[in-house]
Image 1 (spheres, one colour):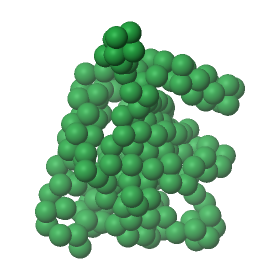
Image 2 (cartoon, rainbow, N blue to C red):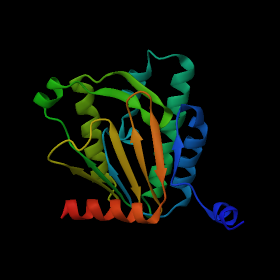
Image 3 (cartoon, rainbow, N blue to C red):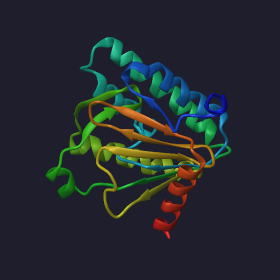
Length: 201
């Protein structure tokens, strides 16, 4: 009886989202962006979709099936709007290593949309990559709540961590199969927040 009572009050260590739970994950992200007032710290493996110029997005998705194009564009528009509203009262700290031309040529960079469980649409050209980088830098200059930190080296290649302060963090795996782990455990959350605070100092 005691064990059953404990189980009723227990919470899972994490929520796991794979492609079979795609709509639940997208809904969770949208709700979180709209309703949770908190600083977000992203240890990025890729540049954010909401800083991508519209013309670049159109060029990237132009060869995809029409249903995928609609899906990506709808998400892009929604996330751009939600991010702008969120930045009115909150901050996003985005850690990302901007690749030099030599680094880019040594290891091609694939375009993906991990939130939509779409992996490796195709490779960036260097010109496309620079376009997205410059658009992200420009976004940072025009939105004081968005802080882009060009880190000295790549932290992770296919893993991205998003920390929503005092709420939860997400560990996202980009390469196929995409998967996202949403972790709310207070000690784990505190541990990862403190780890990156110390690392930054």
